[in-house]
Image 1 (cartoon, rainbow, N blue to C red):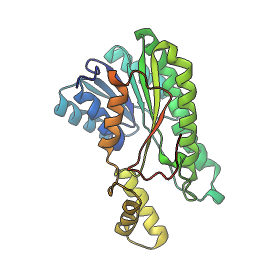
Image 2 (tube, one colour):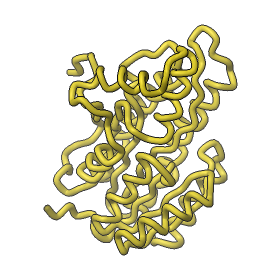
Image 3 (cartoon, one colour):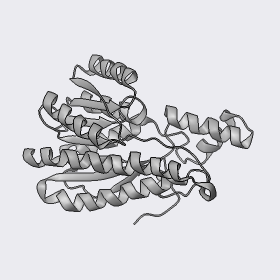
Image 4 (cartoon, rainbow, N blue to C red):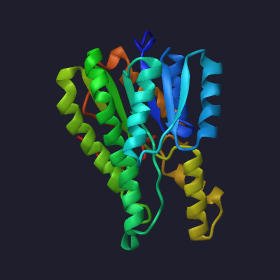
Length: 264
């Protein structure tokens, strides 16, 4: 199926590993030129090389911290300077710390908000003008099922992911007339390095093995396995494709059926 992505320019934040890496790889396989960013430049350069070697597409690594407006401005400027414009933005960067809801320190929740909600907003502001100049574009915000499933030991994820979903709809309504489509994806329990770290932390708190926490996690997923980063990347590709030209302002879960709510 021809997606219409070939020749487009995509910017993927948090692109050095996990969902961001898989998303950058998937877009590059469709023929997009891709800029990826993260804070750790060594891992970022390695990921860019791997994607470029696997796909033959142009992939550039750009170091950026999502808590810095200056970094994000330079990120957008560097992408446009090297690749010409920005057609696709995938906001994926995250920097979270678990803490109990009753003890949530200011610095923990402010870090969540500044990295994810404000980071996403800053990136969107920077790319919208380039997209308007080109006559349209796609923005995909990666949030998380914490927006729908409360977690007493990780409330920061719920607060930020709910905010990302709300901002997605507001921005989608604001820029639809400019041909810019904006959607949100809620990944469920996804097999990434960050997820494995969270499993280890939970195992330590509960005094059980990581394998036991993994077993319990999978037991609550109807498809019988954890979500893979590629599952998220596949939806990103679809939402950026010509086949999704009437989809905007939506929040879609990729959770293997684990969400318990009925979302109308």
